Image 1 (tube, rainbow, N blue to C red):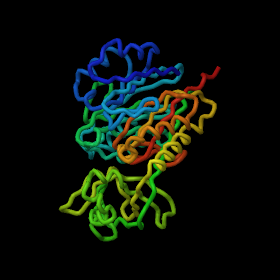
Image 2 (cartoon, helix red, strand yellow):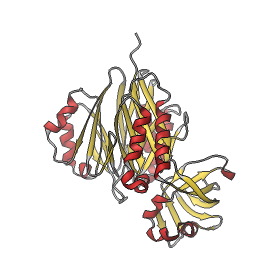
Image 3 (cartoon, rainbow, N blue to C red):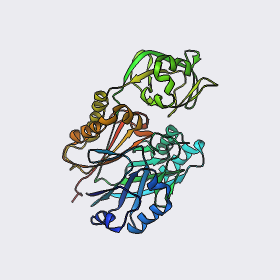
Image 4 (tube, one colour):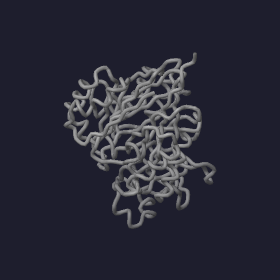
Length: 384
């Protein structure tokens, strides 16, 4: 397995800047960058002309990751060549948020094969039901297939996001890479590092990802009570105080859900993923140290199943909310991942509007918010 990586500071790149990627004869190139690298169709057309025959997958971000650096306003291009493993790319237009499950099923079915080991997917970060997308992918590709990836970002604006596939850039397309063969090592790990505060609250009325009532009271009213001075900054301040879906009596920890919007007329909250009707929620907060520890845990989860495989590429998808909490210390969570992985793998990734990965080691993949998700790719030697 060979990996080559470049960082572009401007969409006005030329052949000389792209040339280092071609030296490894890549099968695919990942492109994670700021919105201007995707909103102008000429940029993707130039990429396709300079990388003929190479599969392209990428998305706009809320921050770019390369090595142990977190950047803004750049594009990170990572080229990969496998000696033995195979890859395939599939995509599907997303006609509306209601089409999320079917779009996922279409992409999963297109990648389905007996030796499919894993899928990495990017999807629009707005006007999508991320939980439905993941369920559809699993239904199309088979429940035993590992799925990781993330929802595209747009800084902290939450306005218009982009994905990149073989057909160019789009604000309404799901794009995924399938990895095939017994030689591929496809590790995955997700972890948050957030801490609960306040009592559990029962979800007494919700609809999809719209939370109407907690304990019979308007959800916004309950939420603002606990936020105090931060309530005036909603919905942006909601990134700092997500919910966690938990079992009764905190018997087990659940998925984290970020607040994306508020409706003051109805007193409801819009969350970044589906909510369990009749379930319990707890508010969460975090320190930088806690989030860094969570990132390290995600890296260990991804790497541990493959102790004898040489390090190749780690794809990191972390949440924009984590970036806002950590501020100037955000590089520390990437440092923690690099240290836990060991062996100096190439590192690429982005800050997202939703992360796709396992809920726990060995479990099926789901949509997360506020986690660090690590996809670890390596390649075993071919059997004689």
